[in-house]
Image (cartoon, rainbow, N blue to C red):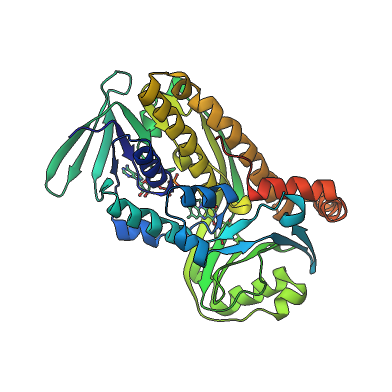
Length: 392
Ligand code: FAD
Ligand code: DHB
């Protein structure tokens, strides 16, 4: 087989890239380790930046998110039972975020891929890129019908944090920046109305909590937990008791309790590898960087990367200019680092760290009080939360 671009991974980065390349008239094949059902069923991100929704519209896959996505023009920060609102409409030039689950985004990408005959190969095991430092790379894999080979001009490594692509870059050519946090997030879904019409991020002495949602009748809730905790340790009663305590105030009294499902514990990590290109390999999304989920940036960053990459490849194929592909890593990383900073800052502001002393706690409380009282500080929060501009 032959394609101009081989895309490894059919998550958000890989599928958005496939659509963007199709729009630019570039031929791509997507190779995915898992089944289509597995990729769609993963419960992960829930918050789309304005530019992600705008891109879905531009690609002709924005109809359902426009109908079913919940547009939020603000969010609430809570601290020890007290709370204040950050109004994006007022502070971020009318931009908003849209609550729409990653599963729904994947369904929309996949359905449009079927209609556009975008070639996605699922259950491709042992995917391996070769010849990345030559002008004629190729990718091999095993399908249920035997060994396969795809020749291409470029390989896009969109295969997430645990994928195969990043490991193809020689050690000496890559610098890794990393911070592992000493706690995780326990996330649950419950078929109950959310306790607030917008998201609530709570800093409580016992740890962080986040009230989110997937629909007016489905809540998505998170608690900071120990990395030693197991899902079985958290009964529904224990979860809701702790959630009510940390969310506090009037939100606690509006919690509807119900059976929880899709319970999972995710560790929190900041990770960036640089550069995001080696030879004919480009990394995009979680393959190149991870943010702690606090700022809801992971999926949105993956989208921002592939917009830069698709523009660069489009220019190369249309004009022969290498300027875009040569600048891809620097351009993508410039935005990545800003999102890393915001996610790190919001994680530090809202979580309980094991060795925090009284001074550290007072610094958190003072920073939250400053946010509450200063329009400038709230503007900075809002500008980052709704999303920094994409390259256009
Ligand atoms: P992925 O979504 O990881 O997609 C990579 C794809 O590549 C996958 O389909 C994978 O199966 C495939 N793949 C992997 N290895 C191979 C291989 N060797 N060969 C072929 N294919 C391969 N972000 C938020 O904003 N909010 C959240 O609440 C949130 N929660 C998260 C919870 C978890 C457990 C995780 C892991 C992430 C979460 N994120 C969250 C982050 C967000 O989901 C990711 O940033 C986003 O999915 C990144 O998209 P991606 O396409 O780069 O990577
Ligand atoms: C969700 C996840 C986040 O990490 C976040 O900051 C906001 C919402 C969610 O899954 O709904």
